[in-house]
Image (spheres, rainbow, N blue to C red):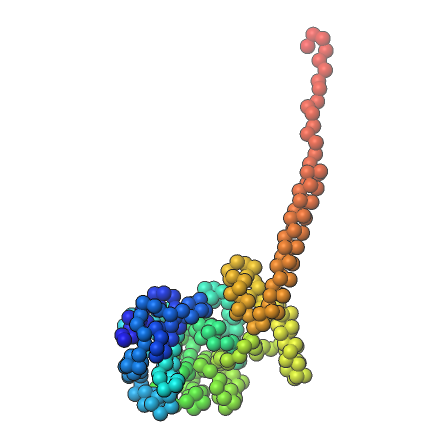
Length: 348
């Protein structure tokens, strides 16, 4: 099996992920759903055995570790193909692959449809910004857009620590140094500690994986750096200087944070459900797609129904008010005056 033609075909078809499993044809994820690439042959053990060598040749150490552990995380790119994040793993004695397509270009905030609060966070100069969400929810792309924005609007030093490096940043107004765990540095925590000695202004940590790396990230933020990272959680959790949020955390009332976010529009805060509802009402996202992406499908549909009813009521009220205004304007229009009659005397 030739890997590059397969990946190229998958990209042409708009796939976000490509799965390879022995006994099945390549499986593509498009628009969130998996479907087989019927035009391709069934994947064999010989195929995946050769592919692991192709993918792992960039890092012989990782390839050797895969033979011992049965897991491999690495980035892959050849020729005119985009970059791919690759995970290879053993299952039931066979090798399987999951390829994630990494876009070549870095989208802007506007292209991604991100709320204004994202740019406000990127405009900060110190603190800890966490981008959270389930796998495939756009954490990497959102962080890339924020780093690219900083890279184009400031004159600073950006250090990233990633496993693997997914989106490559060129030097624009900033210097960007990207370090890959396993190739450039042994681990996240050590790289983060050393990054503090590299005169950084902005630090990107691919993922906070343990308490030690989280503590180091907090220390970096407290010492005047702007630190970005991700967490794998279902709900969005924001670190913001908002008194009510802080009080809820101290009082052990995490269930009330969602309500506080919904009420915090002044601070550019919004809940995930609110964002999805806005997209549905504006016609940008189908209702079923949004419902499937929501944290709680039932709660989302209830909120959406309420919002649609409210929108309908608002439109009706606006139309009623418009008709009333037009009626009042007609009543106020002065009646057309008849021209004055002039009486002429005889002989005129």
